[in-house]
Image 1 (spheres, rainbow, N blue to C red):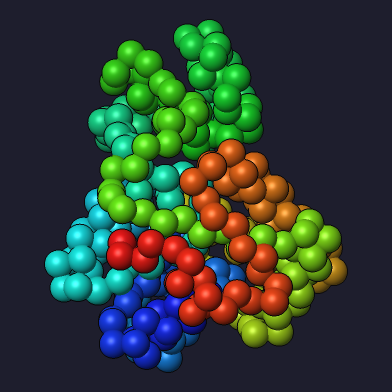
Image 2: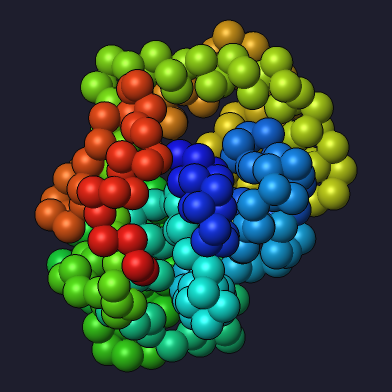
Length: 289
């Protein structure tokens, strides 16, 4: 839909560029499993925040926020329509809303991550619960990464907020569009997407990335599909079970994100099927953004 809107604007004499808001598209090599726009699509319409770093590089949401806002500001200076697309509620909100991040403490973070690797997430979550029960209640006991971040923030600032801040745009003006599908149709399309990724060579992509450190990559290895295919290549699951697990994890992610989006009253929802006409969509909204 973003590509269709960008082409529609271009056909009427106004340039448009797409700004990716998906945390995994920043990593080089994660192509099939992330449905990364093709090289041809990126040549046709300029894209930002894609293929920014290697697998072993950390890339925080705070870094993402800064680069995305720079890209938006650059588009506006040049008279180009910026279209931000994809990603989770956290990343989209971090880009367009007033959203500040606690300072980092790299030394403490490294120590906590070493402890996590040694003892697992349970003891760290117990420690968090003893220090800040409210923060612990907002984090699943098995989520070691978020537990480490919460302990780091508490040690650095004295408190940790596990919920997103109230919605308030930091960038003006902003128009948010949601594309709506029924749950049954979403589930069907998720299953089709898994089959399409498999046919496109997802297993080969993961095998190649494993030779370049995917297994040890702190963030890239957590992308839905990649961890499951690594287990498949390690003979921990058969093909059918791996496909079903990827679909399950995707459905769970969809449910979680939709719960966030539905609470945001600023989003204007359009039926995704049939795909909206870009001219009709553009004509109904204040597009000078």
